[in-house]
Amino acid sequence: MSYRKLGVDNKHRRSMLATLTKQVIMNGQITTTETRAKEIRKAVDSMITYGKKGDLGSRRRALAFVHNDKAVVNKVFNELAPLYANRNGGYTHILNLNERRGDGALLVILKLVDEETKEESK
Image 1 (cartoon, helix red, strand yellow):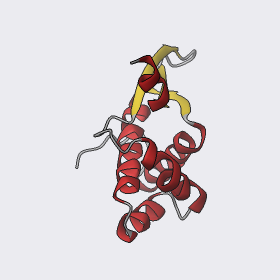
Image 2: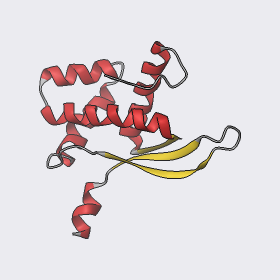
Image 3: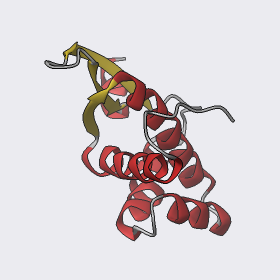
């Protein structure tokens, strides 16, 4: 599996991805750089897929990824998985903002797709 290094070593990158994934799941959205958002999207999609499977092995893999944060895993398995039961992936989307002042990095909002609003608009 290929991944971006994000300018940090392996332990820092894994911890950062886990933390940002937890923030997306608990808050529904985060503001970050484009490259980080593209990496976090993979992790969030994997977590929701684990929740849709719902078995013990999936729960343990999810707990291992988010450093045993049971509140996050319970939210994925009890709230988000039923919400996205009829969706086959693509649980997040990225909205572009502006460039960050200082280094010019492109800032984006990584957001969970809202299923209720899509069903109401149809």
